[in-house]
Image (cartoon, rainbow, N blue to C red; front, side):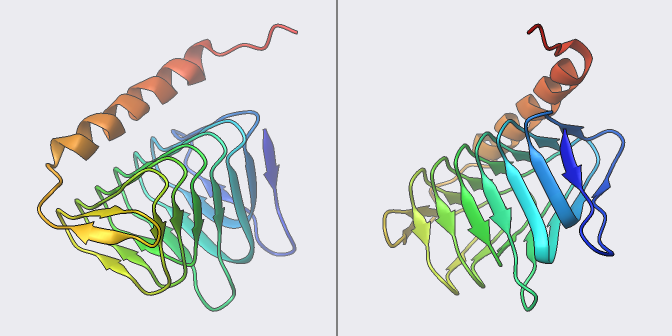
Length: 172
């Protein structure tokens, strides 16, 4: 797998986390217990800090970045879908960021919130607990998210990461 120190910053990856061999982790990145980083996902902590909590999954092709002024913080039990771009934002525990979405500077995704696929959460927007952010730019649909919409997906990725960690083998 492509895990790189950069200057004085070395990624901190919990031993129970799964980082796919085709993922890239650079610099000031922390990955929590039982989290998973999938193929072609990039965590680039070259300018600033990236923190990924426990049991969170960063799916295929997603890009997570930060700046010196603003870290990117993702809580526990989160689902970050395929091809997501996140930069300088905070995602509280138990949130879901849908495939192809973009979450920008100072955005705050509260626990139990959901960002729909292909949505754009602009600078400074807050998505409250239980709300869904949809569209470009995102608008809010309040009381649209049931907790199991997120928790079941997050749990399935913990199990899938364990399966990949034990059974994945390259054959070429």
